[in-house]
Amino acid sequence: MNWKILHIAETDSTNQTVRHQTQMKNSPCQSVKSEAEETASDALVVVADYQTAGRGCGTNTWESEWGANLLYSMLIHPAAIPANRQYLISMAVANSIAKVLSAYVRNVSIKWPNDIYVGDCKICGILIENQLQGSSIRDSIIGVGLNVNQLCFLSDAPNPVSLANLTGHLYDLSELLQQLLEAFDAEWADLEGVRSRYLPLLYRRTGFHRYRDALSEFMAELVTVEDDGHLVLRNIDGYVHRYAFKEVQFVI
Image 1: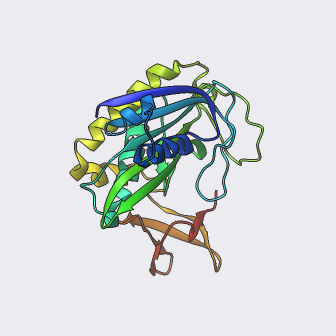
Image 2: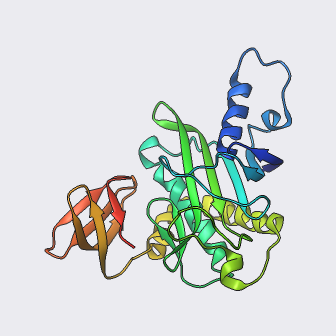
């Protein structure tokens, strides 16, 4: 993709910044275009040193020290992907991040639906917001929070970890961002193979593990993740259940 990178010191959230730029671009009253608006037809990346209201999915927040981590959002226009297959975007993003991190640490996995783990610790969160137009996707805003150089986490998040925690080294954020964008480009160039690369990377991809749904805690094995994003689990009695986002939790 023809990435245009816009670096800002501080914002409420990079996803919100990208959304604001696209809304201004689409406004018929807008006469003076910003740098970001002029490149909105290409692939835009907004990267920030700090977010005052960084968030994950739902009501989750995202903790990050100023200038220590990668906080960025990508704007793409995946019109060729039908709305009912929008989870392909999530798979492609997760695959690319897992691939880059695997060059630095072992035991990297993708925790359904939107986290990257190393072992049982969370190193990255992904928040994707799609704007639909009919049966296709007009805009996709892909927010990524990747823990890189932060050594101490103060929030009550149960299991955060950073690259620096794991390796004892600090990393150049700009260089790492370029690696992530290149890896995403490679995934995007081969969307037909995205799911086959995604499934082997799944967290808890083998064996029985503990989960919790609205009724109870239970032991189950992971069967698959479907094209539309549903998680399929099989419990110890052999019954198969499909879960949408937020309908089941991993008990760690």
